[in-house]
Image (cartoon, rainbow, N blue to C red):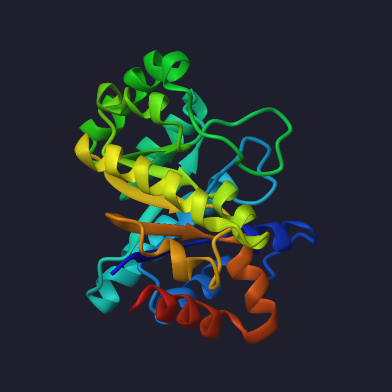
Length: 247
């Protein structure tokens, strides 16, 4: 079974566009978890255009209380660039998992993975600090085979594969070659002893293929899940995704 972590950034984006607390981030987070999601993901960017620093800690408290109330083990995943700002937030919030993502100035969304030949020293400084606090660390990567050869040197626990290229190829009807690239990347990741996550533009159609990726443990999905929820409702959408994933 592949776990579903729902990225709640878009809820915060809508709230922030008007100010106040509508839609209520925590109220909708409860709907998501009650529908069966295994976790929540947030990405607190420096400009706070969606998830704010305060949100990070509000969601942390919410998940802790939810787990105590339901006796579940809902996971909390915080994404972000490997900066001192992000490190400070994560070390204080102590999520289940921190997913390190390279961020380019002005980008709309995460659209590329780390290049380890260049980024390795920085990752080697930050990852041990997070792991020392018992936080599982994933790093956002593409399928470049040569780049993946340096994975073990990062000491990360998992890789989150950037699935934008797969989703794009699927939309044009020629996903087979793309999926094969992800398959080869997954084999290398698993052979190096790392776990495997994935995320970006996955939906209930392309997931019917991608869920079969060897060793896949978790998908983190936000934009397309929230867009679908405008059509059929949030709870129904989460359940639809879980059905596709085989829950």
